[in-house]
Image 1 (cartoon, chains in turn green, orange):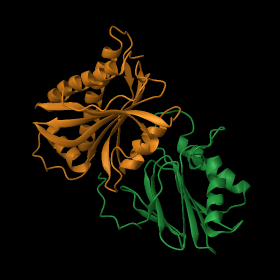
Image 2 (cartoon, helix red, strand yellow):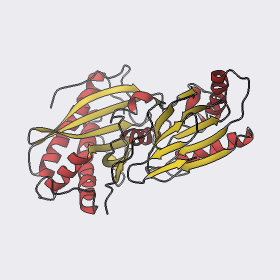
Image 3 (cartoon, rainbow over the protein chains, first blue to last red):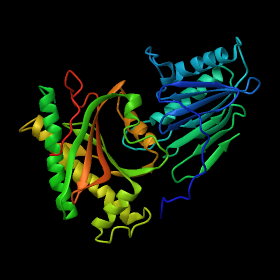
Image 4 (cartoon, rainbow over the protein chains, first blue to last red):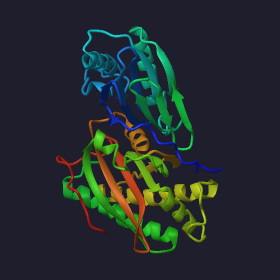
Length: 167
Length: 206
């Protein structure tokens, strides 16, 4: 058995969103990040050709909330707020995609933190009526993701598990 | 476990590197040296990048550590260096292994087990001389993934992820030549009381 894989296609270049941060872009370009147990939350506003990418680390802020991108419960409203601010509108219609939430180690008992992150985001998005149009979650491997700001297409690369697109 | 000073803390990790050097030399059957390249407190965003932020996967082995010292230990290496290490252990010409098969994985996992335990046992002995409780390592897991994804998962293995984490990074030299291989130890926030100030960057081989 081998993990060696063929060379990967080049991924979209764009702004890198660090752990716990939220990136927003309008009109062109891409937002990208690496995730393992964390979840990349992508919000895309088709009409405004705008996207936000939050690199969510934990499911609940429990009153901490800083930086807001770090926690699922603060990342979603903050990503929406930043998206609205970027396009200059008080509100907008958007869709969501979720990437990550892997369980790369099996050292801890109970629900893996990655799964908790995904569940929290799904619940919050449902409460806000934001449809989730694509998911690439779980498993035991990391992912590199990039969202094309105009189309909202998310390209996901892995180390040995192929490339996937969420359209 | 409460080191009384940053110096004692740094000294414990150097002692760990010395014992790990001896264990690795015996395991490989040739001279090998580990030294503490850095020992510092880092914000999460910087800690994620300590293994690099590129798209080239790294491979390695991770162990959960419980007992006197608690945390996560990771042996990480570039593909080529890891495969060369496997060839050395399997008594094959370096370059023979070109992919991660079962034998190559076992070689890396066993190396992490032997070197990691020597390293942490020495740290325990230095910080708590005469302590009766040792370390309890989990079975090591093989992994091959993006460096940032690996470090992120390591950080989230902490029972209560903190804003700043203490990381000890140890580099390798085999037959006098540096190899792209490192040992990273992330103590749980509650598993090892850190000095009042970030430990100074440490350099210099042991």
